[in-house]
Image (cartoon, rainbow, N blue to C red):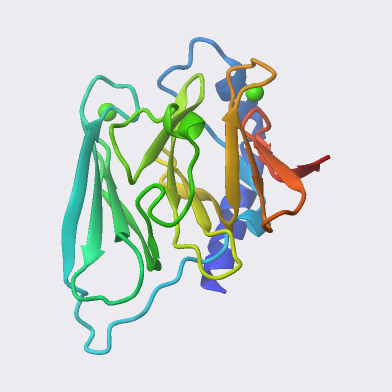
Length: 222
Ligand SMILES: [Ca+2]
Ligand SMILES: [Ca+2]
């Protein structure tokens, strides 16, 4: 409930700033500006977290570190992945930490487990070719002319497609977190903003998440 409330507040606040949003997304001279999307709360399912019984933090162990300039200020930023030692449940990592130069780090955890590419969640070569990182765990996409997105994939349980988690690193928030079978990453209309194609159900209708639309939503296509 708390989560939905915070999403609602974020959406409300973003709605209030619509005046600047269009300038930031369409302006050519805004390379260091943040991208701002209005997110449909339906697109952000709550991440699975288990509180520790003894109130102590789980024993997180670093599994990967990537140094990259996420906000294009010429300074290194850092993405770190962690696994819970002796966790026993599926997943190659359960926590991501993002540190932008000069800002407080922030983290997201998913105890249902995010996975290495093609270990469990299938990711096409065409999608991997768009990765801005040499990583088998983190898909970093140039999503718009002035912003990158961090994409993580969750463990595929039974008949569900597996989680796709999309983080806007500059806005420090999750834009998308749903069971989704990501099939294509394209920019068919060549506007510089990516479109992601996927399916919420295996074999179901194809849906598009178009980052050229500041109101993010899944649109069904035939
Ligand atoms: Ca930077
Ligand atoms: Ca496009």
